[in-house]
Image 1 (cartoon, rainbow, N blue to C red):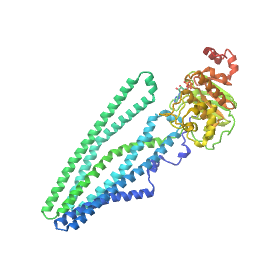
Image 2: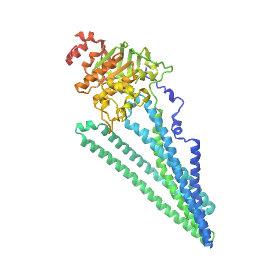
Image 3: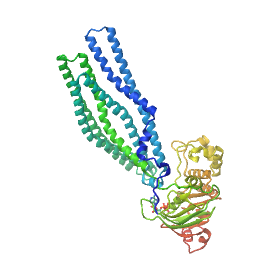
Image 4: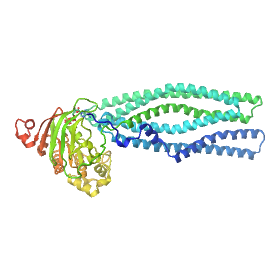
Length: 591
Ligand SMILES: Nc1ncnc2c1ncn2[C@@H]1O[C@H](COP(=O)(O)OP(=O)(O)OP(=O)(O)O)[C@@H](O)[C@H]1O
C-alpha cells in the first residue's frame, strides 16, 4: 500500500488558482485610494496642455500680464499636483504590492515547511529560496509596474487620443494610426527581447546556484585544496551570465533607440500637419502647441506599456511556478480522528511487518521489519552503511509512512496519532545539529518562548554540562550564536541538541549518534547526558560506535533493509555464534 496523496485538511477548499491572486488582492479601502490616485495621476497631466493653449492664444491676443501670470500659475499647480498624484500612486502601489507579496511569501514558506521530507528530498534549498523569494519579487515588481505603467499608462494614452480627436480630428486620427503601427512593431520586436531576458535570468539562477553550493561546501573545498577549481567554475558561470545579459541589454537598447527615432518622426509629422492646418486657418498657434504637448505625452506611457510585456512574461512564469509549489500536497495524510499519544511516561514501540520504499525509488529499503520495545527499554540499531537504520528512525518519527505494515507508539498506529503529540512526545537528536543565527534561548526553545522560562533553560543547560559554558557567555541566554556571533564547537552543539530534547520531555527518543570524533572529555560528557536522556525513556539509538551499545537493552542488526538478528544485548553478546558477538570481536570491543 502506498501513502495516500489526500491533501492536508488545512488546504482543503483552498484552490491554488485563487490563492496567488487572493494573497495579492488589496482590501476595498486600499483599492479605492489607489483608484483615486490613478485617476488623478491621469486626469491632471491631461488638463495641463489646455492651459498652455490658453496661455499662448491669450498672449498672442494681447491679454494682460496679470491674466497670463494667473494661467501660468494654474499650469504650474496642475503639473505639481499631477506629479504628486503620480508619486502617491507609486507609493500606494508599492505598499500594496509589498503587503500582498509578504502575504504570498508567508503562505509559500508555511506551505513549504508543512510539506514532508519526500518533497524536500527532491528540491534543493536554493530552488526553494528562488521560488519563495525570486518569483515572488518578480510578481511584486509586475504588480507595481502593472498599476503604474499599464493601468495609468493605458488610461493616459486613451485620454490623450480622445482629447486629440476632439480638438483636431485629423491630427488625432493620424496619431491613433501612428500609435497602432508603432505598437504592433514594438510588440513584434519584444518577441526577440523576451527569450533573451529569460536566458539572462536562467544564467543568473545558475550562477546563484553555483555560488550557493560552493559556499555551503566551503570547509570541504578549502580542506581539499579545491579553491582554485571552485573559483574557476564560478568565473565561467559569471561569464555566461555576463554574455546573456549583454545580449539582452543590446536588444533592449536597440529597441529603445528604434522607439526614439520612430517617435521623433511621429512628432515631426504631427507638427507638419499642425503647420498645414494653421496655414489654412483652421488652427490657432495655441492649439498647435497643445497638439505638440499631447504628442510628447504619448511616448513615455507607450514605451512603458510595451516594456511591461517583458515583465509580464517573467511574472507569468513566476505565478506558474508559485502555483506549482502551492499545489504540492503532503503525502502524510492527517488522521481523520487524531488521538494523542500518552501524555507522560515512557512509550512502547512496535513495528509490525513494516515495508518501506522511498517515493522516487521503487526498490524496497525496508522489508518485513518486526520490532517490539517495552516502555523504558533502549534499542541499539547496528548495521552497515546504507542498511536502513536511519530509515527505521524516520518511520519512528513519522517523517514517512510505511508502504506496508504498521508502526505503533504507545499502542497507537502513528497514522492515527495527533501530529502535535507525535512531535511533543517523540524526540530526536540527529548527527548534524542545526543551530540557528539566534540567541541561546531561541536555539533551545526553537523560537517558542512559552516553552520554558529562563530558570528552566539554565537548569537544563547545567544538566547537560553546559553550565560553565553559559556562565562564560557575554549575554547569558541572550547571547547570539552562529554567524559573526559566538562560535559553538561540535561537542557543544551536540550538548545543546540534547538540552533541546530534554526540554520537551519526550517519552521516546531517537538518537542518531554523531560519527565524528570528539575529544575524550567531551565524549564522556555526551555519554553521561545520553544516559540521563535515556533514563525513564524509551530509546532508539543508531550506534556508529559499538562501544556505545553498552547502554542498550535490545540489539537489532540490520542488513539490506531486514532485521537479521534481534535479541537482548547480553544474550547476543554471550552467544559466540551471533552476528552481534562477531561484530564486537571484530571491533575489539569487550562483550
Ligand atoms: N531520501 C531518500 N530518498 C531515496 N533513497 C534514500 C533516501 N534516504 C536513504 N535512501 C536509501 O535508502 C537506503 C537506506 O538508507 P539509510 O540512510 O536508512 O541507511 P543507514 O543504515 O542509516 O546508513 P548510514 O549508516 O550510512 O547512515 C540506502 O540505499 C539509501 O541510499
